[in-house]
Length: 256
Image 1 (cartoon, helix red, strand yellow):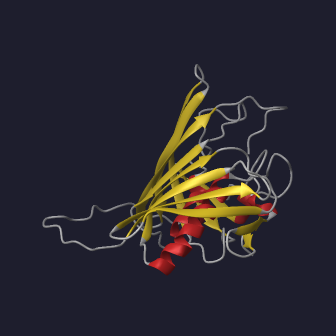
Image 2 (image 1 turned 60 degrees about the vertical axis):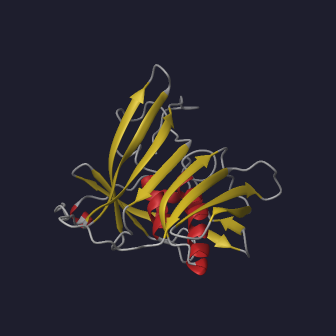
């Protein structure tokens, strides 16, 4: 079962697994839907592989039928740029949008270049770090197996974001947790991210996606930043970054 079920071109129904910790759907799930839809179209039209995604979460995406619209900005040649936007069906104001940069792989010989050795990991050696949603119901974290150790959060998707999801769609869900794995303080404020940017060096090998995060808060302005390296079990595959808007909890402080 996919987290989002398709009902024809640009028509989607989110399952309960798409929900976030508070109001609306999880940002990483929504970004995965939008980027994944572009990846599927890119495969059909030979636009290449997703190199980077920038997502903007304009308002909470509700758990209702959704419609999406893909807009090519520039296509053809080595680099293509494609936008995708999502609306709650029947509403005029968009909920979120992404811009995906795609590139056609082209190997090049670089004299004197040698890959640096990187650490390898077995996420199964670390304890499970499953988390329940503050609202007590299903949410996007339930679609993933999560483990944490040695400063890295590891995630394995148990359900595809959409049927046939590509590498970027798989990475965005875990990457959206970069600011929430090791917070400066726990259980004191909410820290939603209004945006999300991911760059991929290569597609992940295997099922596990690791996030080696860095998080910084600045309470004087109510802001923060999150980010870090993205790994698979063999090494670094990319990077993630986002802004953070520190927000008081509406009720008793709880952290997802």
